[in-house]
Image (tube, rainbow, N blue to C red):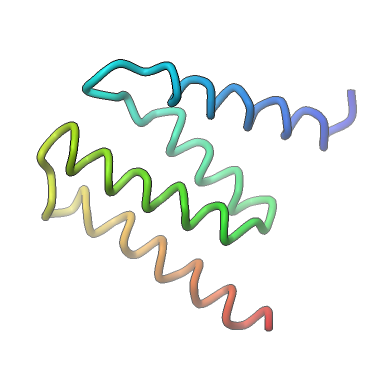
Length: 87
């Protein structure tokens, strides 16, 4: 199995872990997916995952402010800047 296949397999497992999670959903695999997409240069996908993290924190944990929200927001800004520099 080559590394590309391993990344694809990891992404499927991370997505499955999120999809099958019960409320309140554990975000551990979702953070891993965001970092993996970033590492692979899939910034649009990474942004979508960080946005998912913000949504789940608000919906499942009622967290809408503080460091737990600022960190994903900062990651989104960094990724948007990388996208802007790519074009």
